[in-house]
Length: 124
Image 1 (cartoon, rainbow, N blue to C red):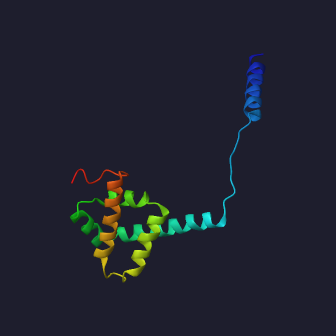
Image 2: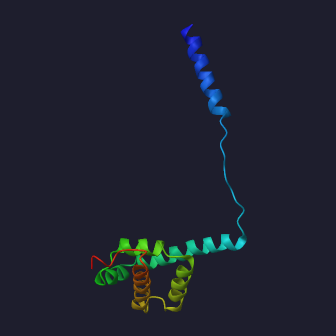
Image 3: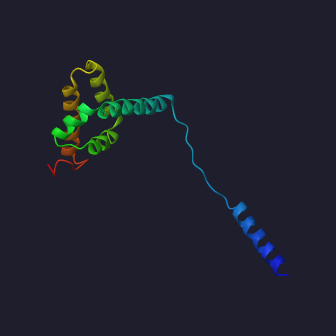
């Protein structure tokens, strides 16, 4: 008798869970949106690879910016800013003018600080 009640309660619970309607939302994205998102991910990976170098880390620390803060700032950049920074990196010779890249990153960080997006230079 008790087993039958437990079984009926379990069946009622399954019925309620199975008939509950869930809504999902999806949207069609255009090809340029998809390409810009994938190119953003590629540029972000490229910039993060450069920031992961030891000499870049040393220069950032010398300028008073921790590696984690720089990575967070780069992750917060807009796609246009990432593209600009990526193009600047492509113009630099491989392993050559790393100070130019660090300067570009510093300028981007400074602009974000002045606009009020981040609050990193108050501790410096």
